[in-house]
Structures are given as C-alpha cells and as structure tokens.
Amino acid sequence: MFFNYLVPLASQWPAFNVFRYISFRSMAALMTALVISIIIGPYFIKWMRRLKCGQYINEDVKLHQNKAGTPTMGGLLIMGTLGISLLLWADLTSRYIWQCVFVFVGFGLVGMWDDLTKLLRHNNKGISPRAKLFGQLVVSFFGMWFLMHNSTYSSLLYIPFFKDISFDLGYFYLPFGMFIMVAASNAVNLTDGMDGLAIGPSIVAAIVFSIFLYITGNVRFSGYLFVPYMPGVGEVTVFCAAFIGAGLGFLWFNAYPAQVFMGDVGSLAIGGSLGYLALLCKQELILGVVGGLFVIETFSVILQVSYFKWSGGKRIFRMAPLHHHFQEKNIPESKIIIRFWIASILLGLVALSVLKLR
Image (cartoon, rainbow, N blue to C red; front, side):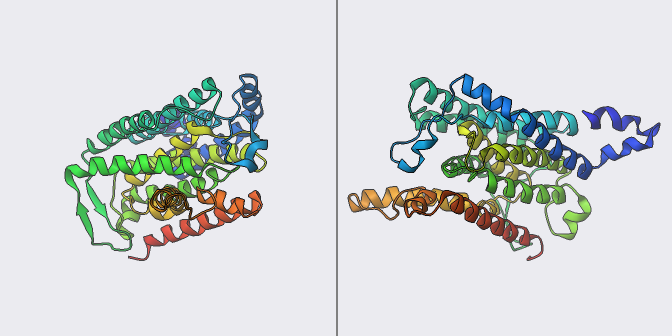
C-alpha cells in the first residue's frame, strides 16, 4: 500500500523514493510482522483458549501427553500478521505477490479444515488422507496454472552446481510443480512434532529463498551469477521477509515450552509456500537441500512404515518421524530442537553456495 500510494508522490517529495527499494520494504515488512505478532500473540492465545481449540496428542507419543490442551491453529497468527505486513509494504499490483498469497492461504484452508475436524471430533483424527491430498492438489494445480500462464516463466528444470545443464519438462512441469508443493507441505507437517521444530528450519528456508528471489528478479545479479532472470519476481522478497517476521513472532510463543502450536493450518501453508518459492526462483531441486531436514523426517516415516510391513512388525527407529526416535532415547526435547536448527542452518549455507559453485 505504501509503495502504491507514496511512490507516485516521489516527484514532489523525493524522500518517498525510499519506498521503491525492495530491500527497504523487505526489512520494514519483516519488522512489522514481527512486532504485530508479539503484540497480538497473547490475545490470540487467550482467544484460542476461550474457543477451547486445544491440541489432542497421539497416545503413542507418551512424552508429549503433558502438552495436551495447548492452543493450536497458531498458523492463523502467522497468516494474519503476514497479510497485514504485505498490505502495508508489498507492491499490490504484483501478480507474484498475489500468487504466493493464494498458495499460502489455499494450503492453510486445507489445514484449517483438518484442524477443525479434529476439534469437532474431540480426537486426533482429522479429515481423511484422500480429502487432504485432494485439497492440496487443487491448490497446487491453480498455483502452477497461474505460474505457467506467465510468458516470462519457463518449464526448464535447472541442475544445481551446473550453469549450463537444464531440462525442458514441457507439459510435465505442471505435475512436477504440483508434486513439489504437495511434498513440501506434507514434509513440514510431519516435522511439526516439537516446540519450534518446524518453524525454525522454515525461517531458514525463507531467508535462503529471499536471497535467490532477489537475485532472480535483478537483471545484473542474475546475469553475473548465472541465475535465470525473471522480471518482477524480486518483489516476492517482500513476501519472504514478511513470512520471516511472522515466523519469528510465532516462534516467540512456540519456543519450548510452547504456548501455542501452529496446527495443520500453519504447517501445510508454510510447506506449500516454500515449494512455491522454490518454483518461482527456478531452484526446485535446491529445495531438497535447504529443506533437507524436512526430507530426512519424511523419509524416516517412509522407511519405518515400509520396513514394518516388509519385516512383519520390526522397526528401524524407535518411533517415527526421526525427532521422536531421539526423544525416545531420552535426549531432552530442547536439545533435539536446537540441534535440528543447527543442521538446517548448515543446509541453508550449502544451498546458498550454489550461487558461486557453478
């Protein structure tokens, strides 16, 4: 809003030129979302308690039974503060901003459907996996449809660490992009099993993609670093910054011991959006690196279930996802969370190294 209303006045008041800069508006968006989150967070948590939106804990996770009743659906706090920040600082004429908002809200609504079903049933069983997958596929399809109907966007898949190797997926790029978003959405959802465990690596991933997106939208930087140039996509840096601020604000209350959980409304929205950000800056495969923690958590579940069926009841891990395995080994929850955060930061640095190692 500031960009759209104040920049035209820059000819009369040159000080308003500062609103042209994506870097300035990104920092402002981050701080706005963070401050608003910290201010309204306590009221939001009290409101969730009054509505009796308490988390139901799986009986198998015995060490988490003391967390039963903690307010959930904290993803609404992230969504609200992100939206307010974008309204203030983003270029509201940017199609990419609205596409990101569509994906974030769309996946969030699927997660809200699941969360509300759990609350209404008074147990930990939400909507069916098929219904959840159908909702995710619908949102991801329209997200990809909007993206591929942009004349400046290509169906090329670039290989990390190589500047001249790419493959044109053609019409197969649409289902590929849908898979990226749905997989990322479910991976973050599986990782969201400890206080602050999912939001920390998500913030790291958003920081990494904000850098990639800024470079992708800048013709000079993209040319120098051999990154595919997409005019206008740099504006999504403001979206990433607002998300980082909203995520940090949420972490203020979600840090161990958590006062609120993000719920599926938060985890599905965050995962789907990270997948979309990777698609926007043409770093689809880098998502597997910067989101390596989510990948490992997901594969731990796949391996556990597959081996359990194949071996007739034997297990690889004491419990899946992987963070529960370490908790069953009596490692303190706070230590597991911090170590996973450190791992995600290292993976983020590896992902950024792609910019020079080509």
